[in-house]
Length: 114
Length: 113
Image 1 (cartoon, rainbow over the protein chains, first blue to last red):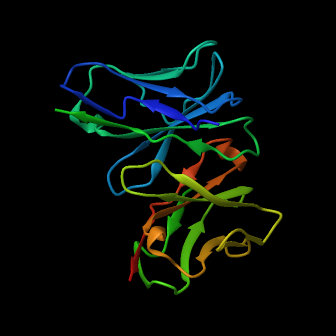
Image 2: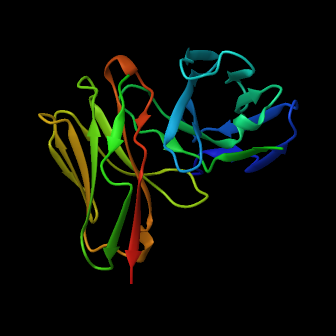
Image 3: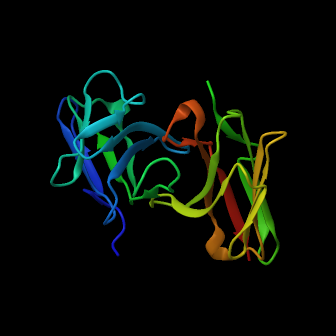
């Protein structure tokens, strides 16, 4: 049973470009969460999605960031017009249900903005 | 705002000894707590969890203790091995925070041979 898949593992962008991060949850999981981690810090919640719905986006920056989880295909975290401060590791987690289930994490995408 | 914090940023332990990692949480409405292990360049790996209706839970070589009176969580690792070297995070969920996890800042465990 494959775990949470994320790609790319490493992404380099120049300032002003767009970054698109993908997450495929574990089989049978319909809840996806995105977190961001700066070096030597803990993970910070960004957004929680179910299929075709954003449930909680309280951790998402108001501008340039968006997320989706379509009926078919992976969840996408999109960062437009990236800036150097966006450099971080972005982790996706999934769970079969929400309220009482453990979230299992993917390997992360490490974004570097030049 | 609510947060989860750790007392010690780095813990050095001799191979074979027991390790104890502590965590304080401030959201009294949290009802679910998890410990994750993160190795360099990897995602957080689930270790053990505990719900607020319990005060102790044991796994393989690990034990989590929950003291709701003082809002304290700890992870005990028995017979620490070199492979246990990593950063350990506690996380909590529940109450007004909903389904999102709130993570502490992490404790680095270094196992000396």
